[in-house]
Length: 113
Length: 116
Image (cartoon, rainbow over all chains, first blue to last red):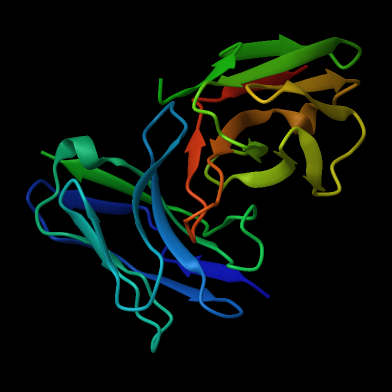
């Protein structure tokens, strides 16, 4: 079946620290991969995406590379800000079932000044 | 207009009440979704409408009844809910798939539901 595993945290970092949130997936075929972010009290927003192997998604200083060989899609940011405090969800969308997005458990990030 | 709106923002209801949640998008999207999200958990898919027809029902109890009156509107009718149904209910939409290979969903801010 399809599933997503990610480090659950909570993760606490100081401002300007380097961020990595690990995400690995299990899927039939080659799914599309996403990172969504949920700020406190809000819905989810798409942060970045990658649709095929070796694609790199990037947005707002965040990056993630679709690694087929390790079935991973780790999220990174070189210098986090307090405003990045949120819950981050890794997700996949199977090519055979476009309407189903499978979410990982989410990683709560707190950035302290 | 690139947003999904949801009303109400908050809803408190008793177990015998009937209420409805509303979702609206004006992006011309062909699919609309209802998710349930409990605190500190990922969203759980409940229903999917594709071109105004129910295409996925994830074995949701009948006390939740979705309705898609037109391509821009999605309702979720609630009746005889239980306290464990208290959660954030999220609506999402996505564009037609022609020429694309991925399903990018746009989420609304959610309705925070409390069942007493």
